[in-house]
Length: 274
Image (cartoon, rainbow, N blue to C red; front, side):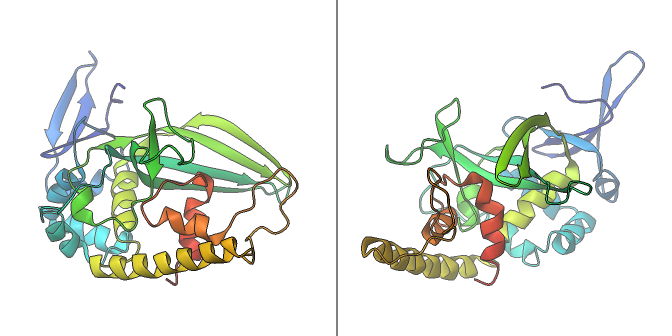
């Protein structure tokens, strides 16, 4: 994909401002100090191979930008995450890369005033761990994995990929329509998506506690399903529609693939008190 003129390019050693002249030649200038703040609204791309830890190092060197993201993205432990990312992991995550994409819904509850929701979504991409996993693989055979509870040092070495393809899911009563579209990312979109996602459950210790509690909940519900007493969260599902159980949502946060991609952010909100 070609970089748009007058945008930002994220490289392994910094953020570069790209400016096109009258001959369409691009001039690259490394941003320094407060220039990184001024550039947050500009469209950006990521150079191939740039990892999460590369971005951590860039932000860590810029006190103004780091302080801004600490508050804007509610990542109060930003220094701790930067340090933890440098710890050698005991094992790998099994993921190939981190993907930042878009989720969009248009709710037609009120025909005169439809409600549009748009947000960034971060996931890991990697091969299936077993053949009985949901068949939602992309062209490369990779499926998406939740990373909310993955230790940051297991993610730090993964490259980051931007996916500008977005489907506008039009929710009109019982009818749903998906309209294909495209949306670029600003530098702020990228940084906020990453720092919000990795810090959603708090500290690394908080992630361990949350994972244990969610595992217990998933086991309990699985036992209820075996005994035939589990209640779906959509009991009014019509014939032919899949009933959804809480254990399906919990799997998103256990780093396992989800066949409920469209519910990831909703389940994040529902688990906010965990």
